[in-house]
Image (cartoon, rainbow, N blue to C red):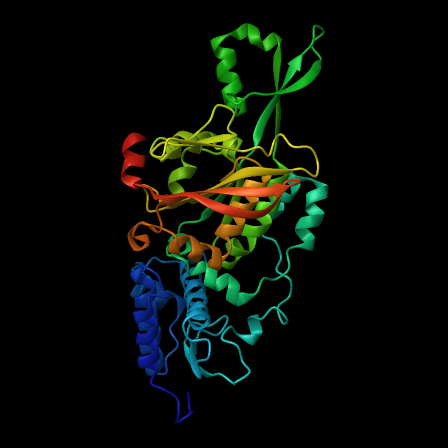
Length: 422
């Protein structure tokens, strides 16, 4: 910071805080204030000092076992990058946190230097490795989709990712220490036995969505054990893999731990201890079905290919399951988000069939589409931007989505969701 023409560090810091780019959590403002004061004193704080002075940890804090400081520093670094991408792309100077350090510095930007660091630009970054959680999903999707995953796991443009993460919906998932749980909508299948006790065919029943459900059925009628058998098998639609490819770069960019589970293996406790992102068909919502639809303005139809608008008394129907190859169809995409009872956030990325599901993933992973959705709202998005639902009609061919129209967009009342779930 020896450049005599450089602006005051405190001035730049306050400009960032005033922009709201640090999110709703006061921790990031406090952390930036702390690092700025340390920089003014030419002092580099230790990880333990940050934990105690900023994050309120006690003297028993163990830096070798708790990564909370590293997580917050990483998130603050990403927010600073997002600020310059979104608010000051042509800034002459910017505040940065060097990788692997707990200090802030004032960096002069050359005219040809983009707001996102050259070190992090797509041309200079190595292809990002999939996290262990995502590798677990590859095993589920099978070899055909594994190739698609590995071929598509290269780096995304830094400015695009950070701009998307700056949207209020995504900020709800990054402003705290809660981990992210990605729930993939799967379908539990069990075996039907022939007269000799051999598996004659596999059965899918909308009301039996896990081994526990089948066991409960056997407890109600033990004679059914002579006809059906638990195979411990599930399957997922192909569109789930495509939707995951859209969302995965966003999840990696959060810098948070991400765990993947199937809906058939989701535990009730998981809904309290994690931010929940669901990707899958509406018909596979299972444990989230009643939680969401009991206070939604929408209702699923009997076959889950229909969505009913309760206020408008309108029935929307997907024809994606009917047309032959090459024939156009209409599908339905649904995006919903609301805060949980334990300061966590729920995000549903779903649809009636593949095309609808993939369009919902397109919207949630693109800042321009998220902003366009906000602009069309006839309610206060500042108040309801992190608690709302949107339904789209999607036009497609052969499971691919081509264009979509917004059919319905209304706020959700999270208080009603949790009141009705008691």
